[in-house]
Every structure is written in structure tokens, then in C-alpha cells.
Length: 101
Image 1 (cartoon, rainbow, N blue to C red):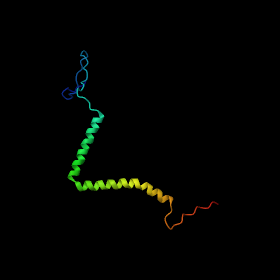
Image 2: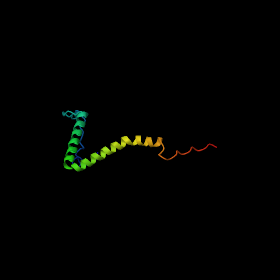
Image 3: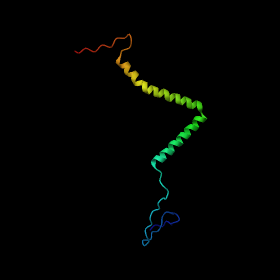
């Protein structure tokens, strides 16, 4: 047994071996579905974005234009790179293949 008083450790309780076990408390509140919480989060994010756009319309327009340009570059970039690798540039001859010895 320790010398520490119960007032110093409020969670420390004396256990009575004859006492009946106590069942843990269960919540009567219904747990929300995962879809409900995700929907709530999405609607809150949409409301926050709408408020930000209303407060800063020029910044929102600049961000939108940047996103559109980024998407266009992501879509067009691979096709442009593929075309430049396949065909040599105008006016230039393709590099000669090394001769085998």
C-alpha cells in the first residue's frame, strides 16, 4: 500500500472485493453514419469557399484561371511531348546512328 492520499490522486479508488461489477456507461446518442459526417464536412467546406469567394472575388478569379491553365497543361502536355519526340525539328536532319565495329 502506498502512502499517497486519495485526495492527491482522485482517480485512485479503493476497491471493495465484495462489490458487484459496474457496467460501463453506454451512450444513448446515435452515432452518425460516415456518409452523414462526410456530407456535413463537404457542405461546411463549400460554405467556407463561397464566403471566401464573396470576400475576395478578384483572388478567386485568379485562382480559377490558374486551375484552368494547370488542367489544360496537364491534358495537352503529354501529347505535345510525344509529338516532339517522334518527329525531328524542321530543317534539321535526324542524328545518325552510331556505327557498329
